[in-house]
Length: 338
Image 1 (cartoon, rainbow, N blue to C red):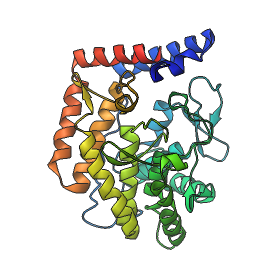
Image 2 (cartoon, helix red, strand yellow):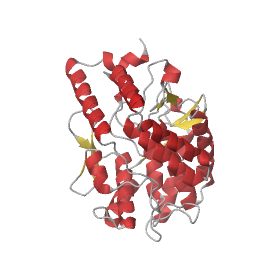
Image 3 (cartoon, rainbow, N blue to C red):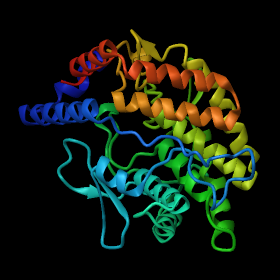
């Protein structure tokens, strides 16, 4: 059976209806008001090491995250997010969104915006420092949910989780728990050196080494998750001077550059590259992810000083404004997942 049919063949009529409702709701919101946070204008990593006064490269806001990602805060003020489509209405503690939210609170505080505070940033940082598992000769922040599109069961490891945790740890304040943050950061590099076949996050595929948001075979190579991981590796190196982080960043960045040659399909971009391994239908990005890809490329241009990434960012933005590309992308997504 072709990979493109796996997800749909195993679903009940009720689950098919849930998927359709989820898809059309997301599509409508994406077309009317695509979710975008932009790049922080105060992010200048070349001027000084990353630290507590350094905003995150993507300018998330705490209030915007709660409303846009269907998040809520628990009784301790820790961010929670809803499980994906078929897993009920429950909310859970995702290390991905906890790190995201902590970074958003820091950006709010540094920019003097209301809602996000330094106290909230510290609360989410403390959660990450206290909630990890020791595996692969290092530490991981597992995601206590599942990813049915990639056949991943509950509690999977993810490069986006590692990368965002690294970015938050890199901004730990001096004299607080910064030494502990540096130790955890170095340990968090280990799973990025373990192959997907061995349960880790490293996929050495057609374009070189990639750190997988969804570690599965055939490889997925989800673009945005890979870049979030690269951001974390750069932050880690800048903050703590860990050469292992710099080596992983450099090799991953070269892979990402090679991947750009196959990202685009008929004037739009892929969300992942799995179809190039499996022969399935391409999984194209939503308009939101087109803009996210653009902002991520702008961030890489700031980090590297390479105009290649700035040119790529403009290409994503032009595509996101093209009605023909928008229509084609949602046509393809409907065929693939409905």
